[in-house]
Amino acid sequence: MAHSLDSLRSDLVDIVRTRLTPIALKYGYSRVPLEDKIKWKPVVLILGNYSSGKSTLINELLGMDLQKTGQAPTDDSFTVITHQEASGAVEERDGMVLLNDPQYPFAHLKKQGQRFASHFRLKKVRAPILENVAIIDTPGMLDSVAEKDRGYDYQEVVAELASIADLILILFDPHKAGTVRETYESLRLTLPKATSEDRILFVLNRIDECTNLHDFLRVYGTLCWNLSQMTGRKDIPPIYLTHSEHRDLNQRDRPAFLDQLRNQREDIQQAIRNAPRYRLDHLSTYIESHSERLGHFLEALQEYGRMRRNLSLKVIMIGAAVALLTGTVMYGILWQSGIITDSGADMALILASVVGASIMGLTLLWFYPRILNRFHESSLASLPLLTRLEQQNRQESWDQVEAPLRQYLIDSKGRFSLYTVRSDARQIKRASEQIAKEARGRITQQPVYE
Picture 1 (spheres, rainbow, N blue to C red):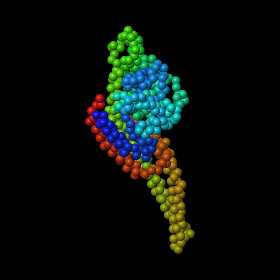
Picture 2 (picture 1 turned 90 degrees about the horizontal axis):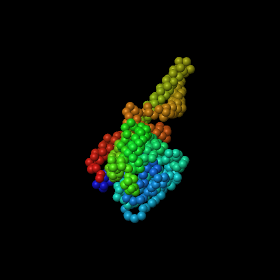
Picture 3 (picture 1 turned 90 degrees about the vertical axis):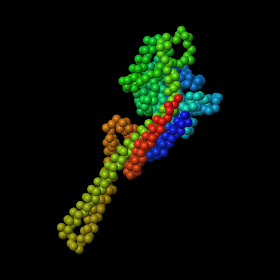
Picture 4 (picture 1 turned 120 degrees about the vertical axis):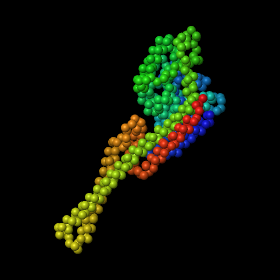
């Protein structure tokens, strides 16, 4: 089963590599190959406030004490945890390995600099749950911290990791039920741009630290309210209720209300085990969305090229007409004025032709470039006019392609082959209509991963 999933995943990545990446790189739609973010194994990203129980959850998943735990912030690093075949000691590598090894999908994080690299690490350990997925632990979110305090853009790193993750767990604890500023920024601004809602699971962890049912209900209600504010949704997303079964509690200290709630720790573990299945769905969505966006990109580029071509033809035709008319009028004036006779007609014709050619040359060398430059600047100032945005999905697609389209037009100065763009657009359309459909069909034939 796992082999079948890996084979299908490899085929889908190859589709991206051969059909989408060459065009994406050609036009600057992407600065790196599109398959870079999807070429590795399925990824589970774990976010949360400091002391929300991320490390404890990871240790339980792995069946060992790998990550440090504690009430105060204990780890300020992003830690990629993956499988190693050999049993024995944990293999640890620094962030530069992750950033420079092509087998890992993290090269795009190099821009965060050396300070980030020193807070990025790899741990390889033998654990059954890691055979098909990798887990990324993150620094606890804080309330009053800025980029200058961390030395890198925390929200940008979270966005990059979220874009490659197949499952994102966001943990809260009863003491900070969604009130931390970095949590608010992540849920309100960062994650909606980097991933889709179906990849995010909200977890209220450590509920055994609520002293009684009333305390739990107060915490749960507070989290629901804060999530509605942070996500901007009126409907509250499902919230998993969990606590560690290994916590050393005397039976008399155990809150009575816990017996009325099911610890959903196993549900979380099952979701993580299903990450390979999620990866296939996300790969298909990835192909479809990038096919659609690239098609939208090239559609707007074609419209720009068509308008520029029509303007060029119009300027040339007007220049030629003015040159012809001026030469004709000049010839007629010289003839009517008696300045020239029949014997000098050829000379007058030559003179009129020279004047007409001069006007045509002036049009091409002076007016033509200035008119095109004005058109180029006007188009850059009003790019949305190059496309139709009447539907929400079109607007969402445009939000993703407007910036790279603008940059491509600036870099190319608006000079490109309209024929080539049309050919590439047809290829992308075939990918959107045929390849993505085939990929989705193959995925539906796969049994649910257990």
